[in-house]
Image (cartoon, rainbow, N blue to C red; front, side, top):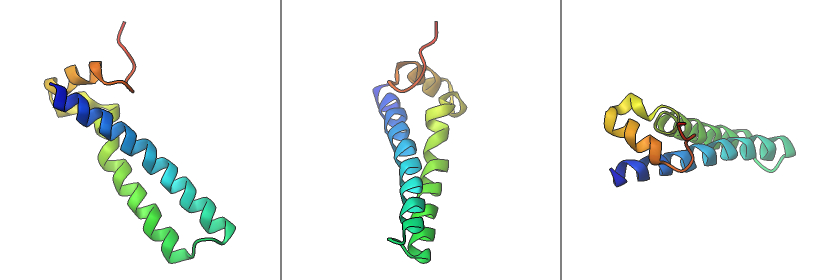
Length: 81
């Protein structure tokens, strides 16, 4: 169970970091600090990381009942009342 909670926690951090990376790449390209090829590379990396990590964070029950239970203990998931 603890490994599933760790996976959900790591994926939540990775998803948030990928959003920040995509935002930073856009800002850097707009400011002229990053060329078009560099922007494409970093934005594609952030997109792939987001689409791999976000389902574990947002919908852990998608991966089975064990992940659904682990999602209740993860620290960036809303607590059920």
